[in-house]
Amino acid sequence: MGCKVGILDADIYGPSIPTMFDMEGARPMSINIDGKSKMEPIENYGVKVLSIGFFTKPDQAVIWRGPMAAKALNQMIFDAAWGELDFLLVDLPPGTGDIHLSIMQSLPLTGAVVISTPQNVALADARKGIAMFAQDSISVPLLGIIENMAYFTPEELPNNKYYIFGKEGAENLAKDKDVPFLGALPLVQSIREAADVGRPAALQDGTEIEKSLVEVTQNLVAQLLKRNTTLPPTKAVEITNMVGCSAIK
Image 1 (cartoon, rainbow, N blue to C red):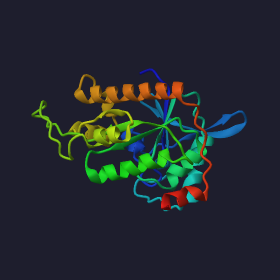
Image 2: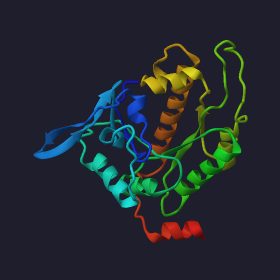
Image 3: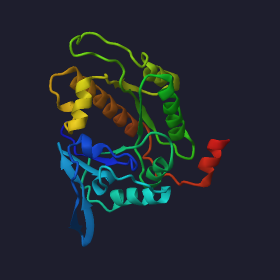
Image 4: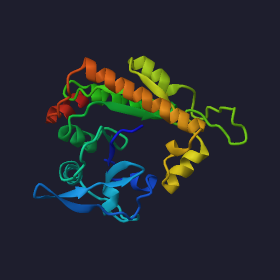
């Protein structure tokens, strides 16, 4: 859409962005910025990317405790030459753990997007994610919820929809929590194939997949603009032990 976009793959233990962007085996170069050595994000499809996957082998497990993971994240944030960006997307792992707290402590996040499949088991985790961002000590605005794998459409029956994981679970969660519903993405074989070969599904011009992704993106940007006009800038979170204590209570 003409925007300058970067993706920080913050899934330290299971980085998948290099595969999905056809960057497996790539290694960031070092460049000099104002006398300091910085990592240069790798660019493909017009998107700048940094991931821990660039520094590990495909069959190498990342066995790090929280502080080591946080240090690696900070290096990819502050020791990188991202340049001028309109959007920096941070791809977080599932859950509400160290990685999430480290990111919120390092960056003043403009907002968060929760993604869930429709079934109750997945929605239970989504509810926890919503609760985490809404905590007074964190207070990151929720831009909305996206429903992934909302329905299955077989190639030979393009007009049929099969709700394998349940119907409108994430949409109903958005209504229940009074947050925007950004849209639903189908479970389609070509999406999986596109991710596996590193060609983003959004490039499938003229398909229902592209239309769904464009709709979700437009809704997200609309909510982001609304957030920026109605709420003050977010501050980086001051993480204390009280975050954990309040969760236990």
